[in-house]
Image (cartoon, rainbow, N blue to C red; front, top):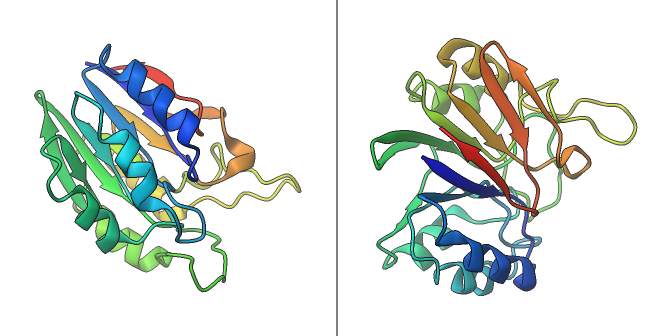
Length: 199
């Protein structure tokens, strides 16, 4: 399977349009959250992305409201909004967990899970899936400019336990483009410039 993946568009219409134009060359597109900015503009971003002709697996970011995301994607047959759920796309399993976990922003628009909630949700993650997580795992692709690691221990522990075949994440902007491994699992904090993966 050939995957085109991105995260953190934050209402970037030009980048969303570029992703749409590339999408037909792929089996599936993955969006690892933050289509909106501070809770605004989600519908506008999704309106552009829904022109893609291939399946789209997405999770809500900490700037996105889950129910709004589900509502705007409800009549989009190719979209799979995941938050604690799995889906099989062309024979490949995907599991998604959205919102922010780990160190979170206290702003009122911020959507977050505490680590206990994230741990509970990740118990549903199958082995050897493609894991789509808005938050990166603690210690990998999660370093802030001041050197702090702000990723999620819950995501890290789930990767150690379940060993996904690939983990795609975002959220920590300073970590965009960074990657690493936990066990046999490649981890990629992708950012808005899309990346290509084969699974």
